[in-house]
Image 1 (cartoon, rainbow, N blue to C red):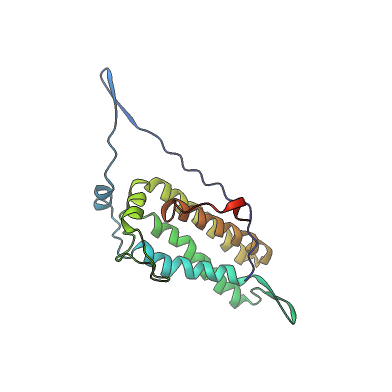
Image 2: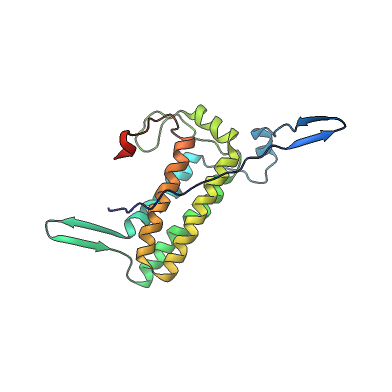
Length: 198
């Protein structure tokens, strides 16, 4: 698999403070507790974040990244890309999953996981810390979900136009969007690679 990573996507989430003015005094309005907001929500999330990632986002993203690729072996260079209307339709189905996964991610009150291990390899998962970050930074999470939706919509357009070059570019941006969110919520304390990862 060969990914061409586009320039990092700027993800800006504006956070404002609401001030209630009463008479001559000013005091910040108390923020609604995440649990209370979730309790009043019409949405009732059942799957955990871990399950949404494992069942929807990861499979869809992997399909997108593998759909257009160049591999080199002893026999030379080989191009992989959707060719037929059926193949482009299948690509489009996975882009739809990413677009709608953004809505699943934005639903308040979703639990991180039922256990304390990753589904990929059974490694330790700091559930309490991750849950705290998700609950206290929900506006930022919604911003990242919006970025996922935006790139998913571009991939839908790529499929409709059957534009393999755009898929390569937007697949790289998708990788940037996912990684940016992970670094905020899942592993913010992971040390940065030396020399920018080069």
